[in-house]
Image (cartoon, rainbow, N blue to C red; front, top):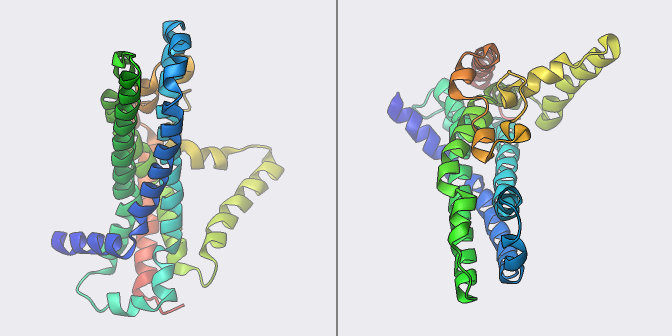
Length: 287
């Protein structure tokens, strides 16, 4: 079964090369923009070094944090697009008939598709983000050194490798596992929708939210949907209380996340959607 699952996972990456090509293209575009910014660094060195420690850190780390935010957002967008089309696309292009004839069960196929947004995409975005930030640091250091300025302070202010640990946790635990009920819902809709799966995926939750707001004046359903982002704890990010990027990425901590009911409820809901998507794929016919 494990061998079949790995084969199914490789098949997803082989069929959907855009899963890594798209974020790679975004990373390349960000690099081009940063190079233009880096050439202005020597002219701003005097102003930077005149800042106090807090403002110096913010000024130096801002481009790196922007890259982190953009890549995280791109990862979520790609995950949603992939899930919406993952099972619907098989029915639309009739490849479902071929894949169902192979010795890979429907459950293994659906789990492999779920693994893409939960684990593979976060790892791709993490590797690209850290790699891009290291290149950014090397480029800016080389430009400063070529202009007679010391780049030693850049490494201390950006803290790329220490922050990489928090980024990996954030992407896998929160953007991956935490969003698994949403990805499960999208796969379920993708396996069922006769047409326009994105509309079917968005409209029912939106309708529930609007009805709740109008009828009861509350936003509990919307809060439930965004609970994976905060781990269900509803706490403000550490950075907002004066912490650094590592503290923000590690909030909630792994211990806090594991004892959060929202996480386990979400995993149960995700399992239900995966079971439904598996049953629907088993009976699927070309769209």
